Image (tube, rainbow, N blue to C red; front, side):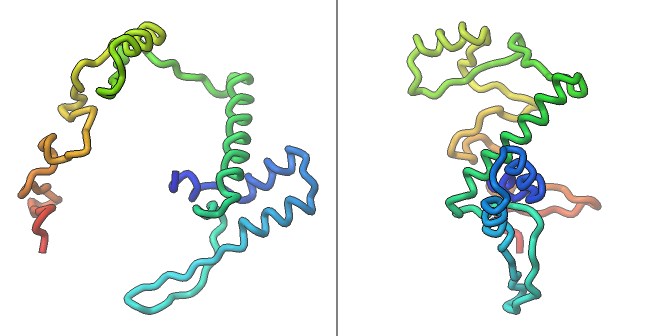
Length: 166
């Protein structure tokens, strides 16, 4: 969610709120709350120059989730208009190629009902895609992707050890 919050364009948000019919006085106060942010970066113990961003919602601000919903509503409206005017073609889920994987806590009866509802196969064990597991639990080492001593090759055959890199 942090990346989505960071990409909210303030001018787009303001236009959405305007189109929803709110009074300009209220919109100006709201946008003052959104745009009054400023940042200072600390680099090697020294504070840099203060700068003002042009987009993004502050996480932790009680208004941010509501503003994000308004932003998403505006985006949804634009996408729907584009689809209606056939500028945008929608993609469909290929349920024949789809699998559904359930937690151990889901009963077999519920699994069958959901599988039948969506007409998808039920995965009994996680499969692999491009030789990588599609499901990784809490223990990343169990999968074998992060084993001690594993490294990557970079450019001209230099190796970086992810556990003991100096």
